[in-house]
Image (cartoon, rainbow, N blue to C red; front, top):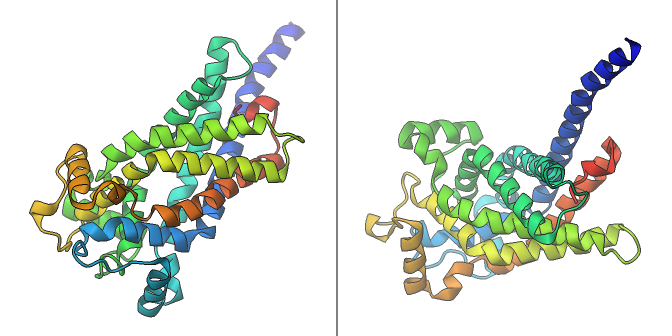
Length: 319
């Protein structure tokens, strides 16, 4: 009898432990996202302005050209706060986005390892886990990204200020464009997020395994930088499409209807015909500069938070 009771107690305690691990992973990922995005917010805004100005009435005469000219223009027109426009909404968005992504990576990794009866994943399996974790996080948080993109562009590429904040933006988009409006640009996002997160996750976790002197601070920074740069280079054209689809449907956009993209395939053809191959990489340089510190900070802060919160077992960290 006592043995049966002990077994019952263990079974009752197990879900609690798993639930605690999930909240630790979710919290650590969310904090990592907020810290990393805030650190590079001025560069992130500049990247988005470069990406979308072609579909916001500046397709003939670019408003933002060089990095220095752009930063100076933002400061003159919007003040210091212009460098952080949309960052508050981004922090609200990125906590669930990054938290869900890391949680999904952890849970999918555990489930897959349990399914195949192994303690580790191959490189291809890590890509599979990371890619589906990215898709999961996008589907659950995309409306927040949609509103955040418009908040970031308004006052700059879109000169009118229509949304006062995240909630006001959600309300107005729902009222003016319906529920589908909150998912404008979801197609290129889903196509691009799989290789982006898959490569990030696989590269980072694989490099961690080959740390020459143990899993040190500097090695994590190096691994995160390489991971971020690799994933972003492959997925950048689809990130550009995502922002353009989000902004071209914005009320008050002066871009004529005949110049707007009808589909992902139409967007690719139009950009290549009108802007050439480099058109897919507008804003890429500033993004390249910010990607390494963003991903490095994100992965390092996530690991540091997990160390502080405490990992119940080695398997708590997806490998």
